[in-house]
Length: 417
Image (tube, rainbow, N blue to C red):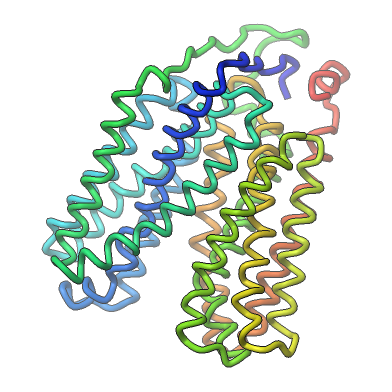
C-alpha cells in the first residue's frame, strides 16, 4: 500500500455527519429498491409479455452482469470526477429505467431497460463509501456503515411492499411509473442538499516517501483487495441462498406451514437490520472487526447447521431465522470497515468498485448452485452450503487482516500500522 496515510476527515458537528449519512442512506435505499423492481411483478409480466420464468430470470441476470461491470469501472470515475455527479447520474438512470419498464410493450424493450437499470445501480457502492470514508469522522464510521446497511435492507423490503399493492389496485405499469417517480423524488432531495455531497478531490501525490506515485491500477496488486473481493463474493452467495431458497428448504425439512415459511425471510431481514444497529456500536473499535465478523457469522453458520440437520419443531424455525439474521447483521459494519482499512489513499472509489463487484458475481452464480441442490431434492445440503460459505467468510476476514499487515517494505509497514 501507499506509504502515505489517507487524510483523516475533520471532526464536524454530529448533525452534519448525520445529514450526510442520511442522504447517502436514501440513495442506497433506491439502489436496493431497484434490484427488486421486476421480480415481485413476475406473475403479471409473464402474462403480459407471454414469456417464461426463465426468460424473466434472464432480465435479472442482465441487470446484475451490467451492474458488476459498471461497479468495477465506476470507482475510477468517482476517484477522477468525484462522487456527486456520478450519484446523480445513477439515480436518474434508475428512474428512467423504471419508467422505461412501465412503457415497455416487448420483452426486448424490458431487456434494454434492464441494461439501463444495471448501469444506474452499478455506481452506488463506490459513491457511497467514498463519501462516507472521506467525510464522516472515523469515530462515527461504524454507525455510518450500520445505517448504510439498514437502508439497503429497507430498500429490498420496500419494493414488494410498494409495487404489489399498486399493481393489484392500478396495474403493473402504474406501479413501475410510481417506482420511477420515487427515484426522481430522492434525486431532487439530494440535489437540494448537494452542498452536503460535495467533496474536494485532493490530487494524488506525485511522489511519496518511497518514490514515485503508483499507477491508478496499482491497488489491484494488493492481496488484501482481492481477499475483500472474495469476501463479498461469498457474502453474496450466502445471502442469495438465504433469500431465494432457505425458507422453502426449511419448510420441506420441518413441515413449516406455508405462511410461516413466507414470513421467515422478513424476520431474517428485520433482525439483520437490528444486528446492524448493534454492529455499528461494536465496530467503533476497528481493531476488533475481524473478531466481530467471526462471532456473527460463526453464530449464523451454527444455526444453519441446526436448521439443516437437527430435528426441531416447526415453530422454532422462524425464531432461528431471526437469530441467524441478527448474527449476520452484527458483522455488517465491520465487513465494510475491513475494506476501508485495505484501501490505499486516493483509491477509495476504485477499491470499493472492484471489491463490491463481487456481490453482483456472487448473486449471479450462487442461485444456480443452490437451485440445483433444490432440484435434486437435497434441502439439507442447501443449509450445509450456506453454513460452509459463512465459515469461509470468517477465514477470509482474518486473511484480509493478515494480508494487510504483510509489509512490502519497512516504510509501508509503518504506514499500515
